[in-house]
Image 1 (cartoon, helix red, strand yellow):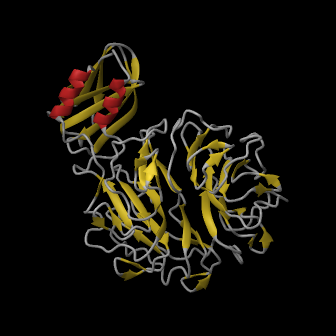
Image 2 (image 1 turned 90 degrees about the horizontal axis):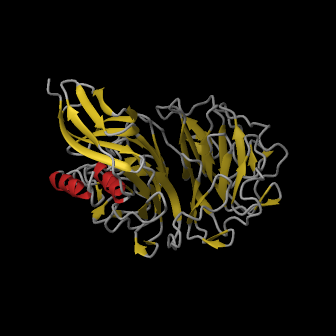
Image 3 (image 1 turned 135 degrees about the horizontal axis):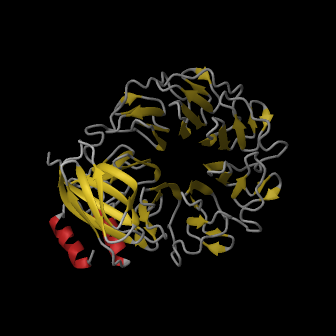
Length: 484
């Protein structure tokens, strides 16, 4: 596709392009939200969300520190927590079976003794099959659920169920200590905390926090553990690590690791509160090369289906550009100004999730986002409800800028599409309505030289946008489907 052709599509399909992220005023419409800080958010498979923090009310209804909301932000009254948590909640994790793990500084939940960790059923009731004994001796700030059902807890605790566990412990699916994890190890040093946990596909665990030692070995606030909890000495071997707290971690699909927090140096290199590590723990020098990074803390990291990266926290600048507590980066770490969140959040953003339609739900201590009063929770979208992470026009624009010479054209039939390619290639295909809703996606289509018929579900009909991407090439077409 030539730039001239692409510009013609841009002119014709201006409603599909996304220029500015806006606060969605239909989200929790008329609701007051939380009456004080929301620390964390977790997205269920059905689109509902669990939010938790320090608050005592949501939309004016008494809810002590945890609540479930519907995908539109309204209160879900089917999630009954009783009197809730007695003190702050800092961490959440949703299991594959829908049960919810909750960590914090509380010592009671719904009037029952639950020291800083509890598991709830999908209805909000305490799951008594998760037996924590005397629980954690101090706050639980991070939770990771393994594929085998075991659970790793991190925090500022020194003991779990009366057993010395230096800020990290692995428990079984029933809450009992997994004695084989970091057996005999002291864990993280006193007066420190584990704030972040991330699981790799091979079962190894990335651990981030404020610690400077682990099992008496010098470890500058980040390390990797083997599946048995031992230090993986191959990770950032000989490096000093971060000079201040690591607060969030995310493992990319390619195995590289995004690290955010309060630090301004890593292994003596200047890194403004965000960096990316290779699979061996060394700095990925190509990420945000030469950039100054965030002006203040990065608290959470999200990644979109197109691999762009969204950071939230307490910063007001990124690489010297005004970015008030939220910024989107390209895959190379450069600022992506196509997500323009107006004036941003009035106070810290602590967490973020992506909904299935690409909308971004953010939580924190802010009472205002942009010009709209919000109760510590907001959803970002745009005026045409275009999915924020998969704008087909923006994808095509980026691909064409990099240069391409091939051709894939599209025509509709009574049962679907015919794709006509000038060479053999494998492409990803997505179909959108004109208002930007994703209707259908095929991640891998093997195109022969010539024509390929692709049937479409009956639900995919009307005037649609078809995008195809193959490596550095991209094509965008407008077609009418459902002629029968």
